[in-house]
Image 1: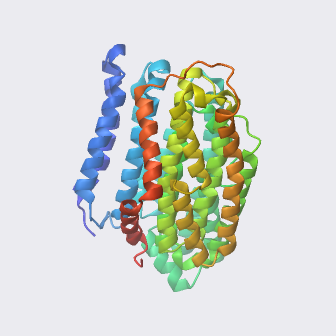
Image 2: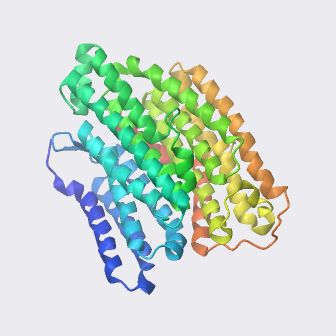
Image 3: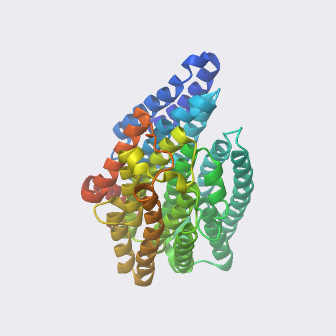
Length: 480
């Protein structure tokens, strides 16, 4: 143990950046407030560089194991910062058109990134819970930020009610784990479970409630009921943020929690997670088929992706842990590319029904091609990120004895291809009622182009990313 507080410098600076942006919003004249978004991006780029320089190769425990500074934390710290940069870039037009005080919006995004990073670093139950609540409260506000839109207000109310309910269940589960084991630190929980040779009834119930609480946060079936309405009502950049960052944070916490704390009781929870994975991917894909709104379709697509990620958690091992993180990275590039097109299209047309995408191939060929490639990647077709990441993840699960779950996941990927092709059909086959060209800002064009390149990079040459993921996996599961 050590108290190298300078290792927390990125966290302190991120919090400072959020409050500086918030304060600057009060001082800047209206015509200058658009600079706050660029200032937030510049700050995040600087923090990413500082984090890599300061934390590379570190393996430290702070505050007696409450906070882990290791390769796993650094991987997700970089992941969340990069996603935050993309979301802020995607929000520039929304903030300029709809927000009189954009600094509040950007500051809350920055605070949510702080919460997500702390979730990945937490080595103790209450630390993890407080970090999760910082993220949750930030997202409650962001979802309802379009105050002039009744759907956004409704989504915010639904999200906060269901989120509070799930947080209460999670906290109750954590209290039962503490009651049964007498500790909240991950390492001590691991040792207590190993000594007891499994979970007692109290701990088993607590574990089940923890899974329920995290299931709500991930939008796993049957705890997914909030996701479609919240995705549809939230501002589009926040919908993209929910689909990638919040799920990444939930799995960052779950992976460390189950690998470092609950691994000795794997026989008590593995079957539950496997059933959750099977139900989640199947329901997500089947209910996506009849959707008419692109945001709701991507919501159910996102739910199905949660099912695939849960496959890695159910078959938890060093390889499936790496596969889970690889799929999460590939999914981030893919989904942000898809949402980038949806955001750009909405900024120009104000429309979000799938039928509105008719003739997009003629109205903006690059955007149609980018969305097609993103959807093919989500379906898991070769040469795109989704194929390689799913193959790596499902193969690892099959090696751990979950061949039936891997087979079901492959079958579900085939189901998903149907509703993705329905969107592609609208863009390339159905003629447009409005033949005017879709105008896309240079910023959004650049965001979509970079995300598409990321989709190909992960799909064709994932070695550099896999090296970083393997280092992160060794921090929580040393045998690799």
